[in-house]
Image 1 (cartoon, rainbow, N blue to C red):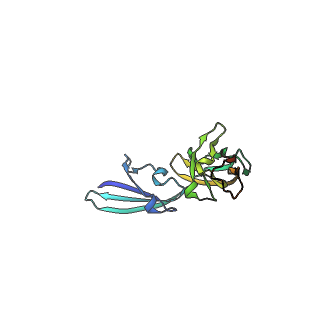
Image 2 (image 1 turned 90 degrees about the vertical axis):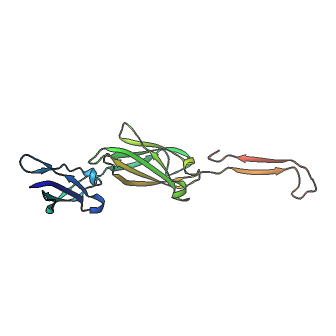
Image 3 (image 1 turned 135 degrees about the vertical axis):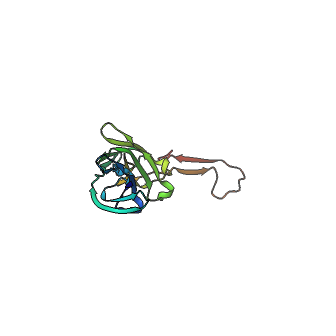
Length: 212
């Protein structure tokens, strides 16, 4: 007699070691053994799935028996565009960013917007904003140059979408150049540039930049 049936499934398009999950078969009254496939147990991605059946008899001997493939199509979320409340080159140090995302097979659980200054470096300037869902289907965040070191340069805007199965997609990126004008200062003193005075007045006139 048969003591148990195991049904192993993995995404052959990704790899057995990363996506294998074994379901314990439930015996049915008609003699069949049942399991419910759930793509989230295999990484949540589409591809060609291999189904293999293992049967263990009452003596504990395990047999590899039937094997079959099935193609599972999963539509990825799509991003129709990134929009921001600034020109491609701007003097603004803060502006709104919106990403318009359309769900695929599964609902969207979150949208992250990562921004970093390519002129300085990702490791020093990267900051990820949590997108706030809008009623029109867009996801919103507010760029703040201070979160990226406060310097001007070419900024990369990248959108990452995570679906309800936990699969994260890198969808699209866009660039914006932020001009940040540093403050300037002029120094004046009430003496010649070469002097015998041991005491004199100094004054500084500071012109604010973008961040002051």
